[in-house]
Image 1 (cartoon, each protein chain N blue to C red):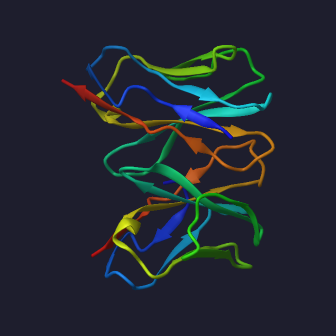
Image 2: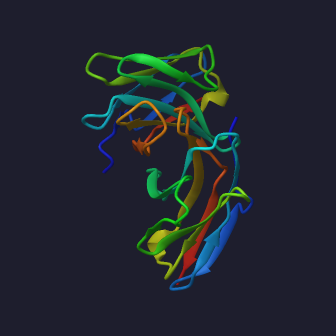
Length: 114
Length: 114
């Protein structure tokens, strides 16, 4: 079974600063996928970034990047130049290639202040 | 807009009652997933359908059932409702049934059981 752990229930950052959200996971599979989803107050789940485990290069999407440490089973999200609109709950999730279930962590509430 | 449509957005009902939540997946997506989000349990996978057939089952109670129809829309039926069933129920869809792609989420159906 997969498990995903987010150890930071809440974080805060000021506008324009950089923040890193932590995530660790556990899986016995060799091929899997990792995701960060964002859930703003509107409650819509929005995909932020994805990483394929077989790719060593860290994924990047504009201001969002990940630090994928496969041996350590760590998958942190870095948000650069934080904006007020980044305020949301962020969920780390994993999905094995041969299975359908997307397993989520408990989430980290990020508050961006002016 | 993810392209996944869920109705109703809000639902208030009493204990012991039965409700049906509806989901229309993105055009072209064959898989539909149901998740329950509650404060204490986080995001829990309930069940997945792929092209009309049940593909995976998670922590779904026996009081709950789901199906996917030939037009690919899905319904989640919740019966003998209890206070603890109050939660946000998400539907998500993806193109395939295996774990290669991300899930696209609807806005959720907020169920309140009084």
